[in-house]
Length: 128
Image (cartoon, rainbow, N blue to C red; front, side, top):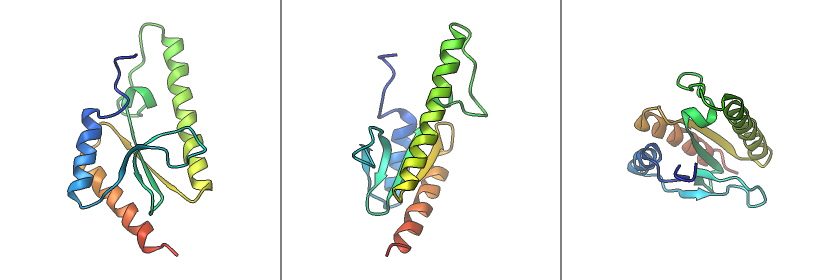
């Protein structure tokens, strides 16, 4: 598992490039809430939007998740733990006034970038 990249994966680079091409600027691999030890892939601090790019295997994508053949009980528990942590992260961010955007790694980067842009722009317009 050490060889699995924590950031700068191909889907993440594609999403970052597409979001940047839309004129948005963001922080990369940052903690939206300093007191919570969780890192978002893209963070828009002023708009309070955190974007997470979730891997289909690691986060149990309903379309593409495959069940591990070897050590299946371990991997099933691992994926369920990731999903539970994701829900908890979203809840903590919402409680703090943030919005979470979840993107699956298989999604088209340009479509996902437009979704991110729409959320960020809406949040910027509704700021007090």
